[in-house]
Image 1: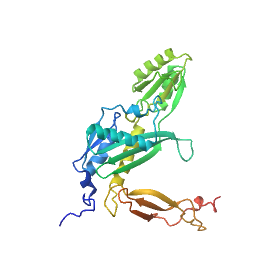
Image 2: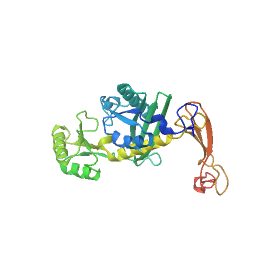
Image 3: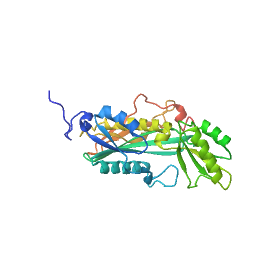
Image 4: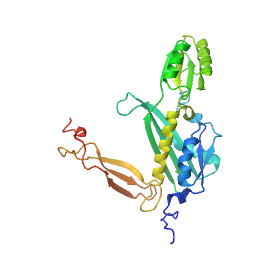
Length: 294
């Protein structure tokens, strides 16, 4: 029986789109270790690690170079640079952001975005994951205080960054990953400091922060799921949610709540749209109802 094909000519199987294809991945921080094992087996592609560009030029977590634009925009720029350097039409890249959690504003939080750009199809697909972050910081007056902070922060699995005096000091020591090195650098920073203090923080670069690296892996899995979601009209990958509609009725009083009642999926290529009702629930818990729980 002939293999079913979709209007874009690539076939019904998403793997056919990327089987044997080189996909550029620009990173200098080891992200290929979690991105390639997710994408390669499922898509049949080959992730081509591109490292001959300093991605710190696009922004640093240690704040000496600010990131310009949005998180997704930064990931897209990285993907484009990788594609240009590798000379391929498809690229993938990631970008992270850190701040307080969106619910309480009290928990350190990490959001990861992994973007795939496919110039053959003219699409850009983004996967996301988020969770608690390892991002503490402190000022110390001596090695004993520094050692206590480091132990509480997950060192040496999570690397350290040290500066003399304060958090915006440009004399930065990054990538510190063993106890002897940390003690020597803390003592050096204290000697350099005019106020007798050193500033310590957890290194947020991917290779230095396994908590963040796990979120990148999960974001890649979310990206893969979107790539495997094909438009029912034209077969293009990335048929995914673009909008959620509130209004799921309260299970007690029937009033519309802020809980989602449906999701709108849209194709980037042909603009086909589909509304899908919430699966597994027809009503919302009264705790989410503004009438029952004002």
